[in-house]
Image 1 (cartoon, rainbow, N blue to C red):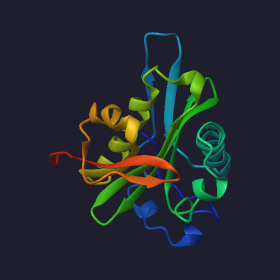
Image 2: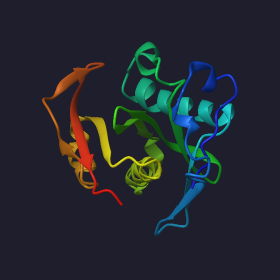
Image 3: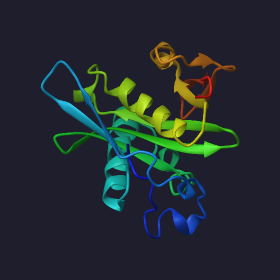
Image 4: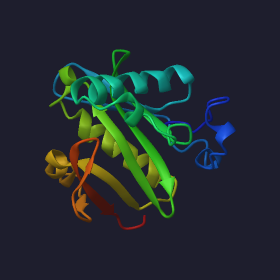
Length: 181
């Protein structure tokens, strides 16, 4: 499981309290699939890894979905945990995790097109859940693009409110509550 450490000048300068948690909470996790490819999920520890996450997000959200860069990047990036999935060193899957008032919020989950339909989306989402569980969270929220509602349902997420528009895309708030360990 990935170690939770601050990126000098990036996270700690914004007073983030999410990194004051157990430094041994997660190291890295490998998922093996039927193909010969192995994906490795990690909590980003370096500025270089965070840049890789932003690059994947820009490819998917800005390039494919025509979301403005100004909307895609926001004030929450500096205080969030960034999750990176790589295949043979190539960044292919990303997500952003924030710990808020009693729940963990999963955000900005993106898989590059050539690596979709290989289980990486479920894998990175589960890695994010596991990372937050290690910090004591058992309630998880996300705002899914509406066409992905059933996808997140595979992990137990359920609709938790009315659909809304964000960046011109229909979204559905979703929630997952697990029994405490």
